[in-house]
Image 1: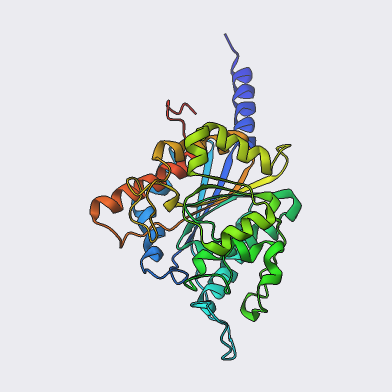
Image 2: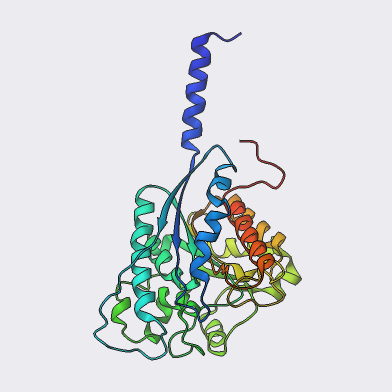
Length: 334
């Protein structure tokens, strides 16, 4: 039999251990779609929240502490009337991402893991820039999970839509390929492509392909996943960019990485993608690595597809997030 004092001491120590192991999450929404040609991705954060996202994250574990930081709001900067070729809605993309980078800093200052809900994929410019401000670039690595490479510049993009350019704006190898863009002067291209790995690729533009070959970009396309299996691909990707497990990992997850059977309510769906099971397993392995420090989930568009498409896409997006935060498909016990 324990004495009352012994029980109190044990309870106190258990509480301290739980506090030390608490996973502190900061959710930030970015209702923004001007980096894409199709409208509606700006409704993604609201749709995810209204589906019960925050409360369901809290149910994963008693050790999860979630704070919702609301949505990003921004004011346009003066461009002095200067136009830059093939950068659609540049002033909006630049202003939104600058504001997002500042909010990501705020979340990190609160010692929380930023989870950014998009919005089109152009918002990765701000989310990753915000993390880099608080993390040495050589101490950070990025998994880009997407059907697309998103490595175009204004001179190579076939559309001018900036949701196809965010990766190229934040890596130093491609900085010389960009003109001087005053609106994006705050965005420092400090990360190296050697610390990036792409998973799920199946739609790559011509000049992006040339960049892949020129810089030796590490990637696993859908053919690799078919040949190797998602287990070997995931762990090879993590090992490549974080061989010693000492770097902070950012995951930028575009919902169109999943096959349209599981996520059709998105702007640029491409057939032959990841199954939902593969996407969940991938993020479970990311969680198990213990290195995840920040994440984007983008391109959920509740204005595309029918009601079933929207429901499936939202549910798939939530399942991906829950796996990243430690949800156990065999049941949670803590």
